[in-house]
Image (cartoon, rainbow, N blue to C red):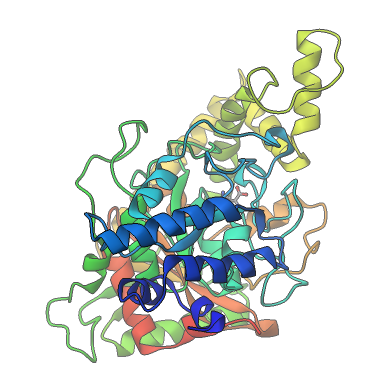
Length: 497
Ligand code: GLN
């Protein structure tokens, strides 16, 4: 089998080829390693060739032996991890100078579960520093460029993940989404991404940004690929206090579950898709609105009904998120003090000076900005006015979603107001990027599952993503709807030149 054919495959297709032994894991791993090593997008921070080949050999041996687990759909599958997940094999930096050279003594639960399934990690992927950003321009290790147009950003914070999948350096990779960091880069790169319900994937070993929002997920080429990845990554973990206790889920089987009354030509029969009017403002870029509406028209043809709903506090999700996330970040990042791990300044006078210099040198400007905002909104005299108020509105936003779900099964809209912007275009104004998070933040604040599904190309030939949001634990319904759309259309098959 030629190299070209291999890297064209997504998780499901390559999994079938591996199962049929028409290709070995070593061959597949070598094919993707060659591409990862030639990465022209700055997506990979580390390519761990030796470890990858060793795991691939072990996977082939396991399949050959036919022991338990030798039929897992991810056995021998090349993948890669956002550098926010700690791994024993490669260093973990979270895109920060603060953690340069840091090696974890343990694997994150998500990493360990994918490893146990037999997936082969090729290495670690670039991201915004501590996952703070929407363009991957906040990484201490350089920008990531968009495979569709190297003058544009790939989105963020899982920018390396999205670029690596879009450029076919790896069939699928892990990401995290706190306020949109899986959905928005997937949208910007024409890939398919899923962020499950808060609590579905363990946060153990995922370097914390905003703990009440952080959730792991994946970016791949299709809903089917996402379903296979998510089934392996997710599940209860006693080491994460917010992990949801429930039996392991087979999201692939849920994705295939036919709706009552559905037929082959109308798989979405009876599905009510709510369109919040706030997700289609007059200011929405025409190309984005156009592609999203066209994809929704396709879903209508497949049997879905579109209903008008409202999420009246959509705009408020920006200030609410940019209070809560920095507040939690300022607390989480206090552990990086140069004492036990992380960067320590070379010269300092006393302990306090060591803290100050280590943190000043280790953190980049956006991280410092968030720590300061977070410390401010939590401080005495301002806590009630900002943090507490934000928490109250967060609850109202979650309630608004529940009111919508009385009228519809899924919610749809754009992922982002525009296609990927040019590198450097946001200049020194962080608020511009914050505002562009408007459509992903509400679902994050409510802890709901969401997907970005390719919906065709907009201005500059750049991909547009359709966002689908579901109620709590509706991952199966989301994947089913996205899969039905992908079975009937080829938006997800379009690729950069
Ligand atoms: N763009 C958002 C931020 O900068 C979301 C990031 C994320 O989801 N990790 O905080």
